[in-house]
Length: 287
Length: 273
Image (cartoon, chains in turn purple, blue):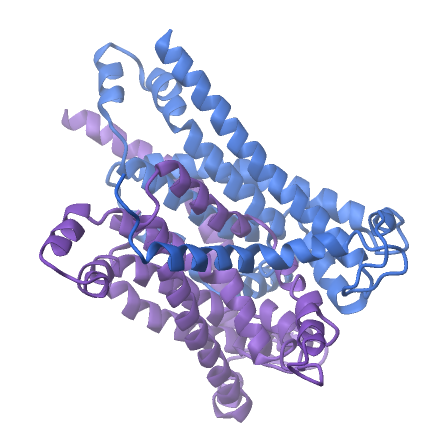
């Protein structure tokens, strides 16, 4: 028996090899390159191998960086709040109020299908609704609620957060729904029999027992918003900046070492926050 | 059947609004892509026509949408195949204990949640420093795998967490070889999950933008083409292309669901026979 399990172990090594090689070549090595280049010097034409801290020094002392980080945290906090509220409510409805498994599966699929379509198109889709002559503004004006078109609807913080909530709520729905489906229905039954109100059941049973789903969803939403630049670029109309846009702009100006330093600082920020969140949950048990 | 609780109705209404929120915008641009030739980017509709879809196929109107579509489809297929095979193998590997497994697991998680712009910048810089040319089928392909493989591996974990190993044991007890057990027991049992992984692999690659941005070299994939269009195209032709791509994504999802159905029917029939 011992020999057999040894053989299996050896199989594991070659079976894990393709994944490992892809991760080494396209994740570990590129990040190492970013790390190295972040200490390099550059001029308008080329990168100059060096070991200097100027990129970091400039980055960490610039008010632009601070502003970008504050903006990004603001987006992350707002998006987290809305995706969690909406995602929890939707997951709760799916898990506890739909009786047949068929309807439940159908509604769940309806919630997840947009995940498999293009984010860029889903963002572009807001333009005819939110633009100055868009559906929302023309409806508001026609009904006499506003006289001028509201300009904050598109190319604004509002539009950016709206798009985040639109794109990422399902990252909350799926893990929270998953946790809720594992809650023993007898617990809820017992609480009802003991006279608990609906609100008490949610607060004292459902929220604590869906905790891990909430954390997994938060990890997704948080990291997606922290590293985003596409949404801010399209929905912010080029006037709003977050950390991702800052890096994107440096790349566009071919200031690779500066972009690399910004990227490393972003990575460190995200990692620190993830270490905290991962302490709260064991991912492998959640699958 | 006992009465639904009073909270059912407001929650159902909330859910309906949520679905409207999810799909409303996409439906709007689908409608607007059928604008008449004189129509603009917003309502009202000025007639209805296939004018803007026709425009798509005239090369000068929107750059090279046909070739970028072909690139995206090819890349999606290649990424799908590799994602399915590599995830299956890695999933099998993780059923046993082996040295370095937690490192690989955490690297996979990192690959999933790392800000995409780091992958883009890192692979772009790496190819540049190694004097390799960035192309969609080399660096672009690798960057897509960093996005699809984590989903594949996590799905495999979810599958094996619920997997009943007694079929395999029975097969081994009956004298089947490793290969036979894999081919005739494991693979058919895993097939539906592998189709699911294939769906993730294809659609995530087909729609991927941020990780492709600096890794696709001088030729655009479809999402990059779309992104470029958002800044310089101001006619409903943008919506027509968006509607077309969404239709392709939806057909892939529908095909997968259909294939799963057929497969399930077939295995039910076989088990009854």
